[in-house]
Image (cartoon, rainbow, N blue to C red):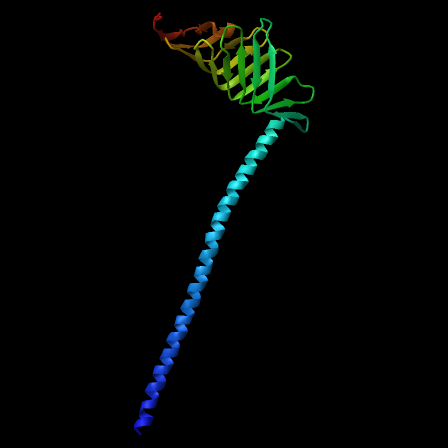
Length: 224
């Protein structure tokens, strides 16, 4: 009778032990799965980062090669060119160079070319070059004129700095003019005007006021 009374307790303890082992096995399997997943992620993430960096490097190299080729492409009647470069001389002997990110000629027979982010340099003897930049430029080969618009800056070899919104360059005489408000800066002061004219690669500069408006500024005397 005593033996038969103890049997249920022994069976219950054995059953609980088996359940505990089963739970431990399940937890161990889950932990192993998480460990394998973490190990894979530790390999995948660095690989993705390295792959992304390599793709960026390849893209930069490809873009550089394409841009360096400076190849004309056509879209309908438009003619496009990346990194355009044009150079010539004025009748006074000044050498000028025009560059940009892209040039577009509307139609195959058109003599007008639009440039994105144009930059122009004017070089003359015994003088540092003058640099003229803007957001958009229009080159008219027939009239031999180059117009820059929006955020235009001019830095001449003699220390003059101009800021305006539009400038027109007569490529035959290398004279730069503008009819929008302009600010001129030197080491000796500042001038504000409504129009300007720059000749001889910055050695001669004239500022103009419109009716009812005067040229203003502050200039200090030469320190020499």
